[in-house]
Image 1 (cartoon, helix red, strand yellow):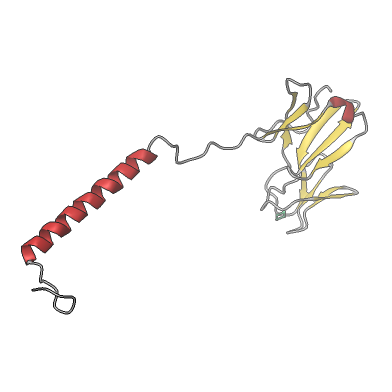
Image 2: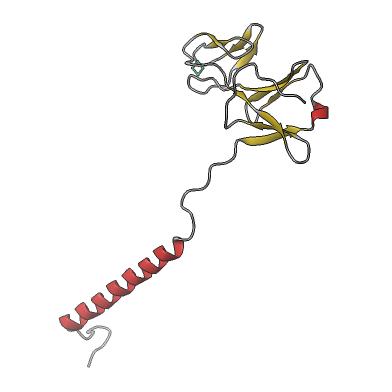
Length: 155
Ligand code: FES
């Protein structure tokens, strides 16, 4: 008679059958879990580069405003409103405004007030972004597309 001290020995054939059943069960469970995840996208869509900066009334002529969370500088002149990136085109540091334009603190690139490279390793000018109006009238900057430097939009 089996006891805790002398358990009944499971025949090898029964053990292998049980192991096969457990393996098959785990494989089916894994497959079902995998199929259940199929409808969900594995890659999230890229976030839009469009963001609101406020109503036009907040941007009278002469305004210069940096949107720090997007590293964009907005300028309003008599020509209109424009948005330029403050992200250095070398390795992505944030440029600082200087009397002659913008200086990158990381490797010394220098840009003129329009973002054109005037010195340093930056391979290209600071990009300018299009500005449009949202349905509610707010100004919207799209930093996912570039426009030629010096392009201003009517407010
Ligand atoms: S990141 Fe601006 S010069 Fe290198």
